[in-house]
Length: 490
Image (cartoon, rainbow, N blue to C red):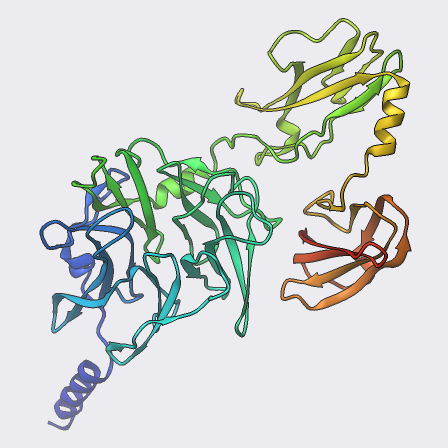
């Protein structure tokens, strides 16, 4: 009898004091999960005239599912966040949580929710028991705060407008120090000149799913800290007129996303597909090479030997640059003129121009899968008088150039031009704006300068750093300031 009492007491204690996992067949509102990448509707009820859209959020234990209801696109109106809760061995809901907010995202521990309003401003809410606090605005200094996410390592990612961006908005790392926040673009090839908005980053930061040109792509984290050229998830996933709002379950099995097949959003729904095998397999298929650093226009004089080598960092192939072969033509695809040759092994143009003029050149980098990237630039052939005049007038602005190479280890070159004789300071900062060292602090005459930064003596960790140029000409009251971002990889 005593043993029976102990057993009953233990059973009651366990069932009342320790949370019970949700049964497998009750996960995801009890809906049958997809077994492959063929998408299925994920049914979430909405009132007539509204639709589910944007990303969803699911707690670690699978017992709460949050989603957005939208009345209209664009601008977004009638938006509400709803949720389901699993309790008492059944799903209950949907319940209204917040109005005028969309795109819920949860912290790793699930006790903080990140949201945004129709103006793409960031809010957060904190969970206390089973209740959520009223959303509070934060990240006030960002012009755009879209799809904020945090990873297992405590790293924050966001779509925003960084100080040094590529497009209208970029996918960025977000660095937070109290109320001070800095968004740093993840750069090429992940970002382009487009408005980069919806995305999902996995908790282990091994991959990102991004929405580009209304289609979903995947990019993988590289060992040097960068990201691979995104790959299209294919027509099975991208079946509609547009796909957006990606979210991947914490076990990386299921991709949830929004898709629509009518321009008026009348049939826009949340879909889900099993993607764990796709995520793994696409990582081992061919990556398309891309243009990383534009070749600048070249100038040479007539009857003077030209010898120009295309830098190895011009193109990047995430399969390895040793897979690339090179060729060159005129920019219109025609053969090079007879006086100009191109050595594909050394990537070198050589020859002696015999006439004045400008020609457009195209360099093609092709990988082993016969996929190419191109770069076009101009070669301007001038006489000696013209090039002397160009050199005399080449400094027409204050300018801080992007360091090269970037990323770098252990050294990189920082170039800048000074329009007037000025007091010049070039400083290095960490990502939070703390000064590390002064690189240049002197009076300099008008001209172009290079500074070679070697970080071996600075004991820096791998990461993002800022370098800033200040030029102050007291006589003309010219004050120039510019900051750029560099990436140091150990």
